[in-house]
Image (cartoon, rainbow, N blue to C red; front, side, top):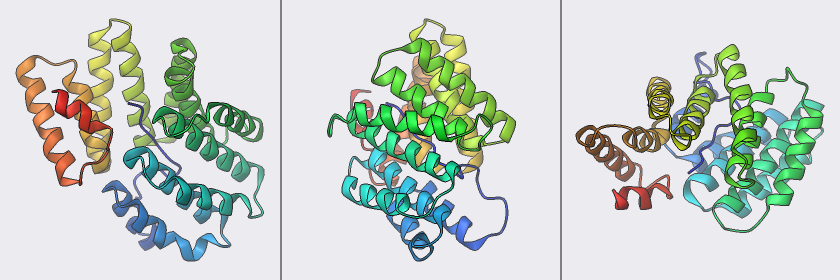
Length: 256
């Protein structure tokens, strides 16, 4: 199952109380609470409005719930006076919302997602901070909806290079994860193991708790059975601790 990464993915290193509080809640899967902290500023500050919308879209991906609330938050952000970069970020978020709804079979919004990603690409300069996230998300669309692994890999590698350059550890954890999945599909278990291990390491280092169970399950796919069982058991404990999110992981854990 595809995963997500959102703007401001680097774990806050400055002692900004709001940033730190939002990160703590988001990293534990408390997206509604994190969004509520941003609500007072979101009416006038585009950055807060866009981040709030991203959090609620991420909640949709992890829980398969909250679609209308995410749509409302995104429309509110789009209604503000935005720069081209901010409009590009909003379009990237809209594309991701459409992708998530399509992937999770809530509603086929693939055409809407493609159009939104196209708008984002036109608005975001090649060196814009949000370009790496857009490349990742277009890669996800190519792999999981269009079934074009070559285009997906190209997108993931562009996103990976930029994430490394910018020191975005959490985005890098996602690019490692998806490059590892492509390597596994291509019959390259050693490369897949490297990608999955790096993804897990970065999620643990950044404290992105809600993303660790999927990383453990992915790594288990390319380990000897004894180690795989240990990893899946750890993933199951964490999954239950977080109240059964990400929701789509339940079937994987039951199958194991």
